[in-house]
Amino acid sequence: MGRSLRVLVGVSGGIAAFKTAELVRRLQEAGCEVRCSVTRAAAAFVTPLTLEVLSGAPVYQEEYLGANGSGQELHITTAAWADVLCLAPATANLLSRLALGLADDFLTTTALAFGGPVVFAPAMHSEMWTKEVLRGHVATLEGRGMRRIGPEVGRLASGERGAGRMAEPERITAEVLAASGSRGLEGRTVVVTAGPTREPIDDVRFLSNRSSGRMGFALAAAAAEGGARVVLVAGPVDLATPWRVERVDVTTALEMGEALERLASEADLVVMAAAVADYRLAKTFPGKVKRHQGPPDLDLVENPDLLVGLAEWAPDALRVGFAAESGEVEAEARRKLVAKGVHLLVANDVSRRDIGFDVDANEVTVFRPTGEPVFFERRPKLLLARDLMDLFVTEMERREQTTPAAARP
Picture 1: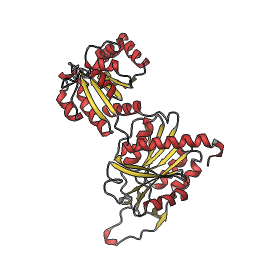
Picture 2: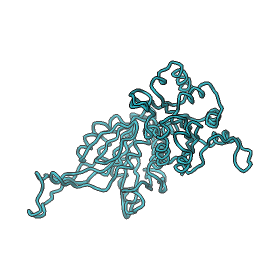
Picture 3: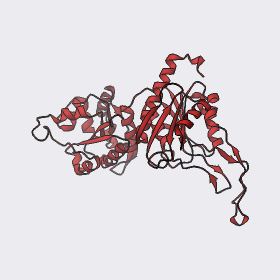
Picture 4: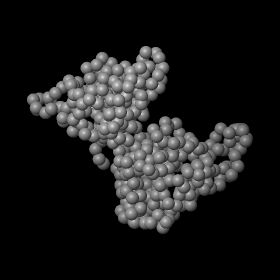
């Protein structure tokens, strides 16, 4: 497993700095290692101690040399440490100084020395945001390849409504991850299924399973980070839609199949991470079955095998299946790889309590028709999703190089 993404969060002096604490938390939840730098003005809005406790690392303020007489120039070593520089909030003053190449404090000297991707989230009153001189500075920064997020329209600190609110931490986090990630999926369409299906018994009861949808949602987020157009077909789960992901909500296996039949033909990659019910009732009961009537006879019929159906719906796409197994995991995974007609089969052992259902981590083995399986040790689902997406991109590129499009199954 590779190291975590290193993000330096630069905080300048605006009321939106109170959101930076939540931004640090969200970046850490996404698997990032975070350090913070605050300007003198920012320290009046959010205390360095708050950010130090949340990030687990000392906060840079006006330091120049490293501790213990090392002689290290901290703005240089910090610029070399970071993979991404995120400026949130980015005030008019900070943006103007960066555009002009001015460097008179730790944050701006570090920014000038930094050579990687920069994401900035402007925050100020709308009267300031609309000034021609400032918009010129912003255009200069964007022309250098820096990524702007927002500002958003909403209620400002003054009580007025206008453009100038800092983007929400969830959106900034998504942009930081996208700025750092491989763009190997740019121009491609990815369809991901996630969550359980529910097969109704009567108007209040249903058959379902323990899938939380987290793995599928993480895969959709990772594909979006990679630059893809992502369509997420989601069963009934209580999860927020990842940034830049189109979501189609379904309930039953038949509904999921209808959505896939409609959407999969456009896809370059289809990832079936949903836990689709194998059976449904031949006929549901009207209203609510009463207890005093005794146990109902549940006449079950098989649902269509959606994974098998992909060969018809998405013949040119890379088709990836997931298998939640217990017992003979490898033997069953190899059987499904052949029987389902997929290119890759991702298997995990759901008999373990520390991975799979209802937890934020997973451990999987990816099986292929040829070659050795690829094992991914236990890690947070979002980190695993990124690693899996890299593998899927590599497999897509390999197929495109070795097989003419017209001949692909």
